[in-house]
Length: 189
Image (cartoon, rainbow, N blue to C red; front, side, top):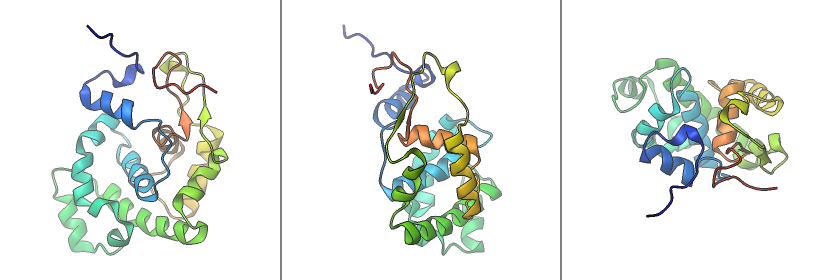
């Protein structure tokens, strides 16, 4: 019988969470569309659990045209109202409207920096920050880097990008490696 891999304790809920942990969370992400999707979805989780959003992720992808920012900036009041009736997503008017606003800000950053990836990774100097984490209790909710990211994103017109959301985004996108030390996914310096 194969021995179960040691994972971060937060992902032990079920196979969906284990798969997300093993194949996505903490992996350095550099695709602009995927980074945009992840930032939006991290914002959608505000006040909720990531598990709630993760279970609805495919519905979000369908509802928001695969997070194609060029399509999202064209959403009108009728489209927004249809999204607010979609039971497959979190039907919060502020969050749905934030996705559209974030698409506009995202495209402006791409134009200014050449890519969102180039812009967003500057907050960690272009490479992942590897933290040594004995237990989940040692993981901060935010850092000076997430504070700086949040402040700059807000200045550029993004919504639902507070420092705690930005830190969760940094962890999920691999900008920060907060896998616990004994987790099989932990990077070593």
